[in-house]
Length: 479
Image (cartoon, rainbow, N blue to C red; front, side, top):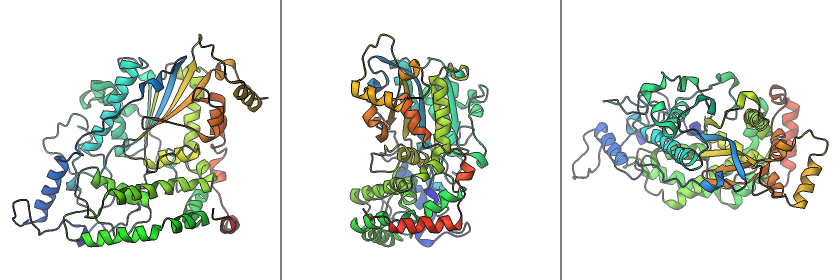
């Protein structure tokens, strides 16, 4: 699941004075705030009138979805949920606005209910509606890939069992198909209730701490010599102390955001974004340099997972297996996916981060932001496309596939990856790319290396193995 709960928790029945909005101070008219409710109202008004109360102007790279000589056969879209409330009870949830689950899309609540922890906000609902509308304009109006009207056989939707991901999937589908996914019609069409949601015990859409080996590797990763050396060279402790000083100096002033300690920058950034991305006041000192460095450190925490390659297999490998199973079925024209065109997976930042690391295509220096989208596009050569693959690449592919059962049709299919409206490239496939796409067979081969054969067995770890891993890690070079 999302790592956003890494900030320090407090007891449900107590709120630190430093985290409570100040009860005194100058208002815009020079008067004195009489109580906390007035202060919260002021913050909320700032949020609702801030530039953040809008959606991003997305630029969809339409030509990437209709390359000359190929046609799009299927696409899988893995999204992070939209903007949400914090998962810590440190902050008054009345700072944010949320719709009720029943009236998620159409905003019919005369008096909106108070938000819950980690809930999709009104801003977050708009994020995913906006993404869905952009997919509509591109995939229906321009590329003519999806049908004009919603057809259940063309669409597959899966979500983790969290309100914010289920609501995000509903919002995206509303943006994509409008009234068919408005609240009044939704249950009548059996829409959201048809989403695939796995039981918690078998969920694999994000890395699970219930895998002992994965949990152990994650726990020792911050002590890896390469991590420690990088943090020393980048003077991370100096930066962390600078942040702590900013928080301490902000106590009692006009910002409700206060974090005295944090276990990870990914968690800190997720809490921070709940305020910044809703236009809520931030402590004085959070300038562009500070924010950029926080995002950079969060991305490093994801990228360092590559130091233990088996973390990808154990963390996200089973989900990769699910994605590949669907992709293979479509590529080989199986009956159960004959009409399938669009697979939507509503997930978390930890899902996207793990996938980007697993395929070695994490090119950005920031963590996966809310409403991010990672796409795997399956293309097939047009019958009249006589363009030949370069001899060197053809020979490489032939060598790679020697002895493997393949069909001519599979050799005519390719996978393109797009992350947040920009193509990204799988490192292991870069030299095999054809028209900047990974040959289907090569993509499946790379994916198979990431899928555990027996997850329960591979998750086991003995005390002797732990000791051996630690010794090997200590002996590894710093660079």
